[in-house]
Length: 258
Image 1: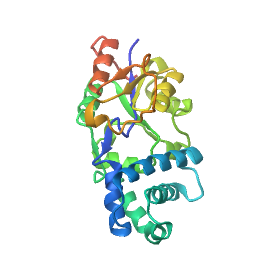
Image 2: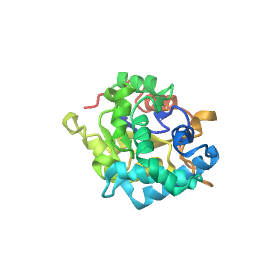
Image 3: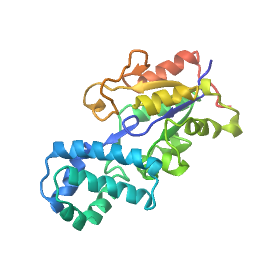
């Protein structure tokens, strides 16, 4: 077996918020809503986001991605204790600030191992791509972080209309290289931080999979479910482990993507 393609999740795999999301939300909320308890913002954001994701997967809804995130931001503020009327009076301004912030390096940064690993895989003639449940702003973020050219294709759930763990989004990534030759599922590896969406989704699609669990503060934002069973899961502590595994599979010689 030879690995010809490695696909990556985006958030908490290749990149992370420059500061915790609840901290950045708090910074934006305070001038309009007064000081809200950061811990309440943190819990409210997680629960609101999970609810909206369930109700409107792949950013569906009449108001599009802007309306989708407006619901998340409004629900986060109210859930953290802000009065609904006060929130609604300044909602448009807060949404505008947050949407802009999380469209660039102002809101995000790469993990230290991300760029070196992408370059190493490319030098080994292994294709690298992105499969993410993000909206189209992720393109702007990756462009601003100067890493888009190392991730082709960029498959974003808002643009393709489906989300991981749907098998189709993984198939689309492999089929994007059809002009260079077919890349089979067993010649592909997916890496991400979500057990169901990334690890189980990729395995169900016939791909190899790795679940990223970084030690220390870098792993704080990863998608972890209470009581998740990782006994039979291929867990790695860093992206460097991806390179080591691919080298072991490819005989440390690399391969052609064709």
